[in-house]
Length: 59
Image (tube, rainbow, N blue to C red; front, side, top):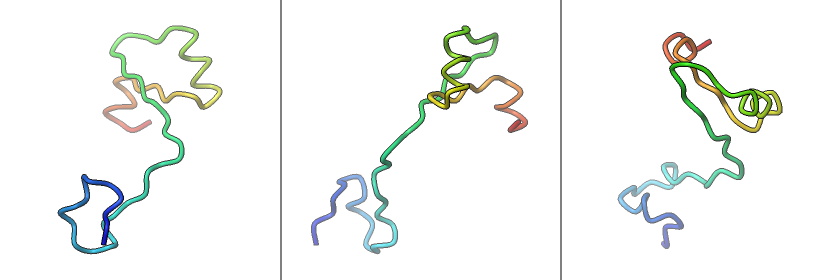
């Protein structure tokens, strides 16, 4: 059996072979602030902004 993704070659069970995501949302991290352009992109769902509050509390 050919494994489609080389990083999963060591897995013997089919249940461990994951599919490549069709869409990934980039995340941006900052301890201070985000520029208005990034906040607008986050409002459109194009990026995820992670500040210390979200990083440590999840909200």
